[in-house]
Image (tube, rainbow, N blue to C red; front, side, top):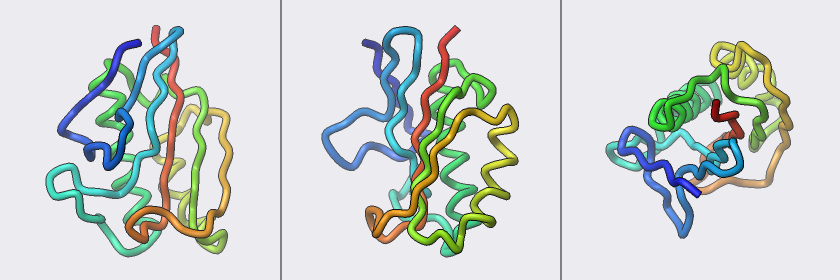
Length: 124
């Protein structure tokens, strides 16, 4: 396994890696709207938080020599399905290749955030 670590995305807040490459795929831990510099949440709305989350995903991909085009699967967690449309508007700007996706509402996420996204990308 090869581990990805970049200071341009939030550091792991537990006993896990930002991302791991194995078997021709990059498996990224759930990315959040935390600032890479401060660890604080960026934004108060689902749109603002989804934007920062996607930026953090982009940095993980970049550090691994990949782009959003290489993503084959996402799993999205939001705390309120009423935010589904606004979340999708931001998500669609980044994931233009339309990877497979699951999106579920969860009771809560760390530090009271509104969304989290994990990805699997093909390493070519």
